[in-house]
Image 1 (cartoon, rainbow, N blue to C red):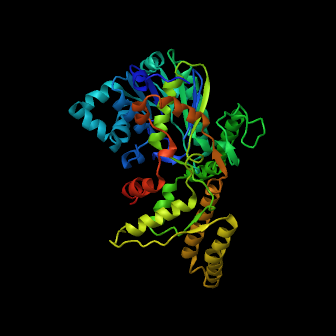
Image 2 (cartoon, rainbow, N blue to C red):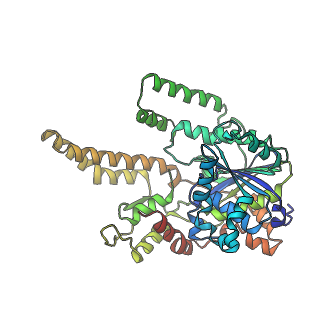
Image 3 (tube, rainbow, N blue to C red):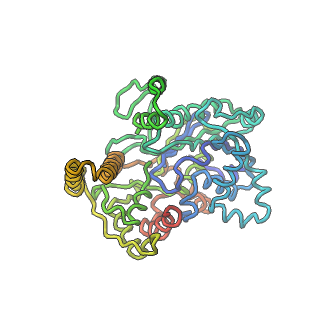
Amino acid sequence: MELNGIVESLENKSILVSGATGFLAKSTTTNTHLFLSFKGLHRVKQSLTESTLFASFHAVFVEKILRVQPNVKKLFLLLRAADSKSAKQRLNTEVIGKEVFKVLKQKCGTSLDSFILEKVTPVAGDISYENLGINDSDLREQIWSEVDVVLNFAATTNFEERYDDALGINTFGAKNVVDFAKKCKKLQMLVHVSTAYVCGERPGLILEKAFEMGETLNGTSGLDIEQELKMMEGKLYELRAMEATKEEEKTAMKELGLKRTIDSLIVGYGKGKLTSFLGSHESVMDLIPGDIVVNAIIVAMVTHANQPSENIYQVSSSLKNPMKAPMLRDLGYRYFSKKPWINKEGNPVIVNKAVLYTSMASFQNYMAIRYMIPLKGLELANTAFCQFFRGVYMDMNMKIKFVMRMVELYRPYVFFEGVFDDLNSERLRMAVRANEAEAKMFYFDPKCIDWEFYFMNIHLPGVVRYLFK
C-alpha cells in the first residue's frame, strides 16, 4: 500500500460532503465504519479537545481540510435546508460557528470570512430525494463537473426515529448518494461513513468485509429494500385512511423502526437521576474520538484515489485499546465526586458509585422489587380511593415503561460480545508512518488514547459544559 503526500494530494481537490451537520452530532462516538471505493463505495466504521468533542464530524472534517490544505479548491457542503439562504445560515451556525474553528480563526484573522466564502459552498438539499434534493440546476451541474470526492456522513442513529425517516435517510439516502456520485465526471472516490454496529449482534471477531446486496444480519438472504419501502408506504396509507392524528402516525412509524449515546447516561448520572448501569464486567465499550475518524477518512481518501477497488476500514478501539463498562462507571464516580454538578438551587449533587447490573435478569429483579411492586400497591390504592392517585400512578407507570424500553434498546450494545478487527486500518496506519510529520498530523491509532486522561480531562468536562442544562 503506497501513500503519497497527504497534504499535497488534497491540493486543488473539490469535495462534496453530504450530511454536513447531522451524523453523530458529538465527535466521540461508538466505533465507525468507513467504506471507500473508486466510482463505487468506501466505508469507514467509526486532536482530543472539548471543541472537537461536541462539534459534528463534518465541522471537524471541514476545519481539518481548510487548516492543513488551504489550497483545496472547493468544499460543497450539502445541508438539509429549503433554500440557499437557509443553507448559508446553517453553515454559519452549525459548522463555521463551532468552537472547533477557533484555531483556523486565529490563523486567518480578519480574512476568515473571505476565505470561507471562496472555499466553502453551502448546498441546500436532502439525501432522501433524487439528485440529493438539489434544486439549483446550475449548482448541481457545477458539482457534477468539478467534484473529485463524494463523502457521505448523512445518517440518523436515533433508535426511536420514525421508520419512514430512517429508511429515507439511512437506506435510500445512501442509494441516492451513490446514484449522484455516478454522475460526477471527475470522481476519484466515494466514501460512506456509518456506525460499525451495522454488523448486528454477532459475537467474536468482526472482520472488515462488506455485506452483499440482499444479505441480512442473521445470515439469511432475500432482503428487499423496495419491499420495505412498499410496506412503509402501505402503513402510512392505512394510518391516513383511519384518519390517525399526527401524533398517532408518529408513534406508529416509530414502532416500525427502533437515540443512543453514552452521554445521555452520563448526564443522568451526574444529575443524580441514574443510580445504576447495565453491562457485564467484561463488556467492551467500543468508543472512538471523532477527530481520529476524520484523520482516517482523509488518509483513506488519499490512499485509494483513482484506484478501482472497494475497501472497508473499521476505525475502532475494542481490539487495540478496549474500554470496559466498569471503567466508565468508576471514572464517572471519580469525576463527579471531585467536581459535582451544581443544580438550579445552587446545591452540589452528590453521587454514589453506580450499581452495575451484569444481566437483564438481575436488572429486572431490581426493577420489580424497587418499582413494580410499589406501583402495583399504588394501583390498588388508586382503585380503592376512587382514582385519587391517578396522576401519580400514571406518571410513575409512564416513567417505568420508558426505562424498560430504553433498557431493551440499549441491551444489544451493553452486552455486545463482538470485537472489531482493524487489520485494514492497521495497514493504512503503517503506510502513513513513513512520513513522520504527516503521521503526527493525521494520527488515528486507538492505542494513543489514554482513556482515564481522556474522560477525566476532556470528555466528562465537555459533557458538563455542553450538555448539562
